[in-house]
Amino acid sequence: KAGVTQTPRYLIKTRGQQVTLSCSPISGHRSVSWYQQTPGQGLQFLFEYFSETQRNKGNFPGRFSGRQFSNSRSEMNVSTLELGDSALYLCASSSGPAGTEAFFGQGTRLTVV
Amino acid sequence: AQSVAQPEDQVNVAEGNPLTVKCTYSVSGNPYLFWYVQYPNRGLQFLLKYITGDNLVKGSYGFEAEFNKSQTSFHLKKPSALVSDSALYFCAVRDTRNTGFQKLVFGTGTRLLVSP
Image (cartoon, rainbow over all chains, first blue to last red):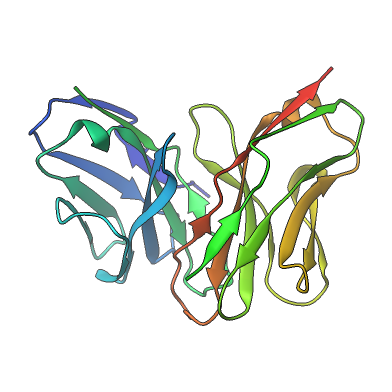
């Protein structure tokens, strides 16, 4: 069974630009969550999608958005990039019930210059 | 609000010795607890979880963790450390009241260094 796939693995963007990151969950998983990992703030929850609906959102500005498609694939978008958005962005998928573990992709390393 | 504390930034242990990585948590309801490991430039890899039942849970690669409700702790343990266990370890909690929601709250991580 294929794992969680995130593309691209690395990105370099300039301040003010926007970026779109993609996540393909494990087949059959309907829940996709996104996290930001930085040395200073650690792992922070961004948002969760289930059956194309956002059902939970972390404390991030509106520049961070996401969506989920009917095949459960998800994208997150960051507009008007700031230097502080440089981070490892991790996607996790799970089958749904709260007691199930989440499986993470390898992440997208975003560098804003 | 949920929170997780990992009081040690780094744990050093010699290969073959037992290891413990500490975790305490705070939730309003009952917790679901998880341990993940991260190798350099990689995502998080699931090790084990506590949902309910036996307080000692066994996971991947010989790791186990003990749930202690009175001390609100969920320490990760391994009887005999390997050099290849050297990595960054994260404890995470999910509040059982949020049925179906997948949000995890993570600790700050503990770097484990196993020397030969």
